Image 1 (cartoon, rainbow, N blue to C red):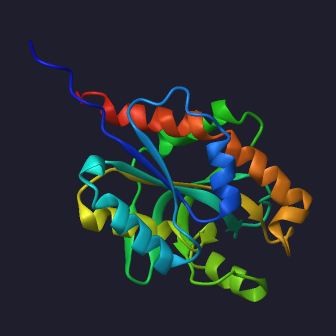
Image 2: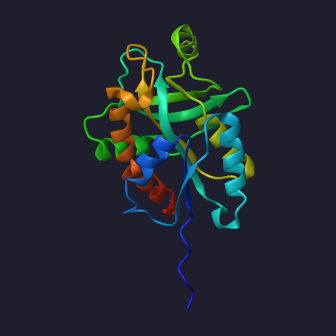
Image 3: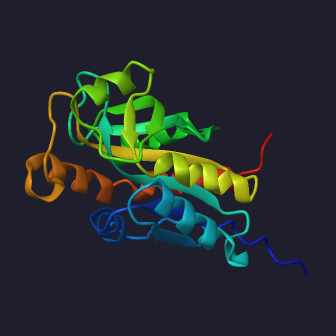
Length: 213
């Protein structure tokens, strides 16, 4: 009698301790298959090192990878607590297309009702973006920027062909720039949203396990 196939694992990568705390406190109910929540550390180099190292583990062979955490919105009208689902991630070293964007949007709408979900390119940076640089990046067509998503997905697809995605929570925006994430209302709002998104991530992962017709 043959055994059922083991579900493919899911790797969820974030950078900051506060992001990791939000995800860890969100619970694991509803996951299909093993889930690893990785704190990579801040910046693209740290993300590349951590993701490459972890995906070398045979237990994570074939793992789907989802980059998440906070981001800076680039489009006018964005607010702290809005969600960004990347259609692609961009960095000087390469662009990576994301899988299941429409499904993620629908799942996030159910998981965090009332929150606006934006879709579009997510660009990478090696530093916190402020002031006029935000407008310059927005002029490229990107809707948000963070320091780790592009490096995370690029490292993931370089180790093996695998489904990847990026979902970020806006912590500041053109009209709502923040100085310190943990001491202002926008940071608290973003934390609460990030804590609520795991069911959407699991739904995305579950969809990857379904047979294609």
